[in-house]
Image (cartoon, rainbow, N blue to C red; front, side, top):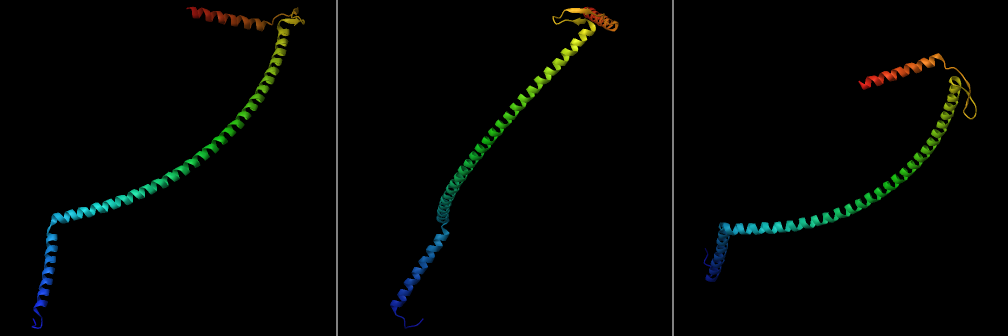
Length: 173
């Protein structure tokens, strides 16, 4: 130490050293105070969590709004597509119904014509058969000329009658 320093300088230096020593002691005391450190850490974590929660809430709100917009757009697209498909299905159904109606009318006319033809053929065949087994009739349906029944037809009728009688007798037993 030199003699050139004055007492005032030395006192100022001592005061400065005391202040530094007090700051160091305070810092050491703060580090040694675990309870205060925990409180500070908890407060910092709470503040960070609150900040993060606010950010997440804002992000969620933005995403929710985007999802709402996309859902509304998609809903409108689905509605339009469904309306178009419904219109197309109705139109196709009407066309198919008309085709079926025409086919039914045409088929019915064909069935009527075919039935009339078959009926006419059956009438002709029946008239010819009557002429063969019974005889000739006039326009009023009166038999004018009788023919004898062929023996084979009479035998077939007798066998059929016997079969019916036998079946009836067996059922009664």
